[in-house]
Length: 266
Image (spheres, rainbow, N blue to C red):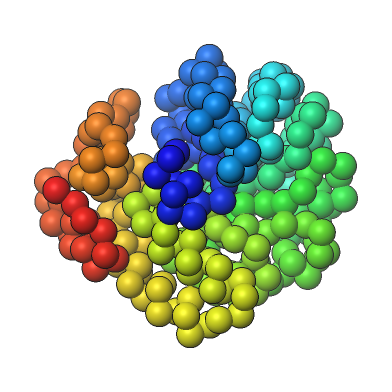
C-alpha cells in the first residue's frame, strides 16, 4: 500500500479479482479492509470488492462492510447464474438500498458470463447510492455510450488496461487497473495525461506498457501479475488453489514486458 501511494495511486480496491477475491473469506476481507485503512489513512480512496452470486448474501455483506471505514463498494454482476437484465437491475438496486456507502457496478462478462447492458446501467444510474461502473468489456464505444446515457454525474471507470487510454478519451474518469500493480507510476501518469487532454503524452506512456497490459493475461489473472510483483520483491509467490503459479514457459515473456515498461525484476 505504501508502494502504491508513493507511486501516485489514488485508489485501492481490496480483494478484487487480482486480490484472489474468490478465495478470501469474509472475516479475512474485514481484516484486510481494517488494515488497509490503518495504513492508508485518507491518502487514497478505499474500495471493497463485495459481490457474490447470491443477492441475499451480497446484501448482507454490503450491510456489514459498509459499516466499516470504507469509501465505496465494488459489486460485480452475479457469476455463473446468468440473470436477465431485470434480474441484474433488482440485484444491484437491492445492494444499493442496503449499503451505507456508494456502490460501483462492475461489468466483466469474461468472468461472469453476463453483460450489464447500457440501458440497464442507465436505469441503475438513477438508483440512489449507485454512483458509477467499472466497465471491463474492453470497448471504448461502450464507454462512450455509457457516458451518453447515464449523465455527467455517473462515473465510468475503465476495467481494461489495454483500452483504458482510449476509454478516458471517450469520457471515462480513470481505470481500475491490473497493470498498476506492477507499474503504478506509469499508469498514474498515463491517466493524468489522458484526463488533461494530453493525447501525445498519454500515448507515449501507454506504448511502453502495451506488452505488459497483454502479457499480464498470458494465464488467468492474477497469476501473471502476482508473479511479476513477487519478482519486484513486494510479495511472496503463493497463490490459493485452484490458482497455481505462473508456468515457467511464461516467465521470460512477462519479465521482458516488465523491462520494456522500465520495471526492475530479480
